[in-house]
Length: 335
Image (tube, rainbow, N blue to C red):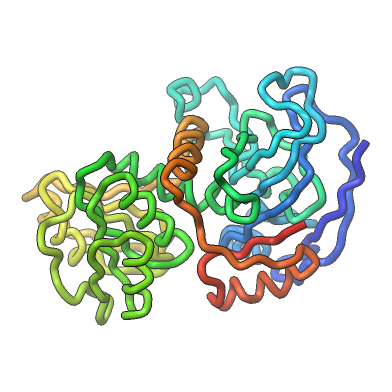
């Protein structure tokens, strides 16, 4: 039995308070992890506030976890006590459906989230299906690795699904928690990156992160065209943006991909899709195989989120800064 000391929301929108629970016994396929660091994602805020309508309280948020394995179930053979691991959004999947069998378990209809179907990483420990607990390369520091397991895999998986290899022209809309990692992945894997952002200061930061060009957004539209049409545009912005101006910047067979969830429906003109065979897609997190690939590339090419760290005891201060968009670019709690 393990006594877990956590921080939980007892109701929608409430500040987090100390709360404890017991893990009586690990399931045969589970692993128990001692939390060393945990990122704060906007999805944690949405769950605390029950914006999506399925939060269950007491709610222990946290799904960008870095920690140390302290115990494993009898069926777990690839992890052992003492290993440093990361845990992201997904807790489990059925393992039997068509999506799971083709290696796309993150699309499983029975997929379970770390904080939607259990308690998360704003805590001393958590237990999770060992399939969704990933050994971390030594090159990834504990305080920065967590956001890669959610925001990092979200943008990496989307870019891969949209066709990213190397030698392409890729646009990134937004320079926030997702966009600043997308710029790094796209540029360091050998692509020409154009950032679309709202301020000169963010344009300069985009260049420091690896963007080759930056186009300012004025009145919700790009202020100019890139020198050549783009093969992929990844929209990381969580607010509604007009579709047509960005479709018009795509090359033939270009892809406009959404990972930021707009707060209102988008209007899509069909003619720009027809004439150049363009397409629009969305993308969630990534499969286990893609997560391992992402971690390997992040370590090899030095892709790291920029983080601000807070003691776990200051969780409400950190959450308030995230709510007010005062963190550049990711907040991380340290145990």
